[in-house]
Length: 275
Image 1 (cartoon, rainbow, N blue to C red):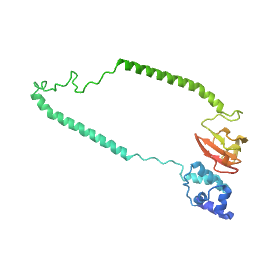
Image 2: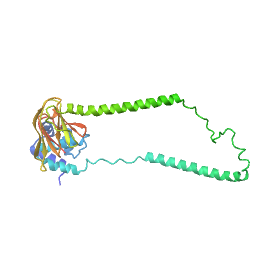
Image 3: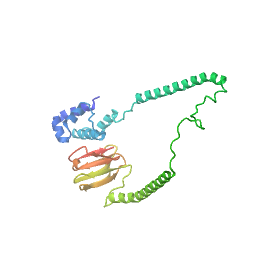
Image 4: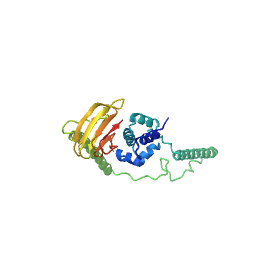
């Protein structure tokens, strides 16, 4: 069975084009295309970019992009590595436990040595007590007493701080809904952001269309019809599942997903899939 890189290289040579020509046509760096054909997918980029570049290159070479992406996903590169526990922390913990055990053993041995002496000289033990011990039996010096005025002032400061925090919380609870309404689209055509939604940010004038992606990779339900977005405009779109985004100029559009912004994986007119 051919690897992903072998299929890409064979399709490119079948079209009779060089990697440089493919890079100019797809707007993807030639070293990325060379790594793809060599089955090297570690580009030091976010996973969404790697998948977008693979999809664009496959479509350019007239290959089944979905099958190629499924084979790429089967490599298991998107699974995060489990972090190994730090041996240094466990080593320090073992040392501290061992030292405390040695201290307890030493205290027990010292107590056993003192028991015979205590039985034979029980009458004189009271006279051998240090004279500097207080009534409570502690040899530690007493600390200075805290003035009542200082305690009273500290209590007032604490009350003022608590009241200030409560006022700040009340003000912010009323102001936040108003700010959310102001930041939403004034035309009312965007959908409120939820956990299953993305935001489109126009860096410059751009025409955008968003649809759902069917199981066969074709366009499905229209989530955002052809729309001209001005510079600085933000549109929030439902994300019921995998979606397709068309843009007249990919470099003029960014997407915000899970609180992070990503540029489109192409510059000119093309489409990208968001899983």
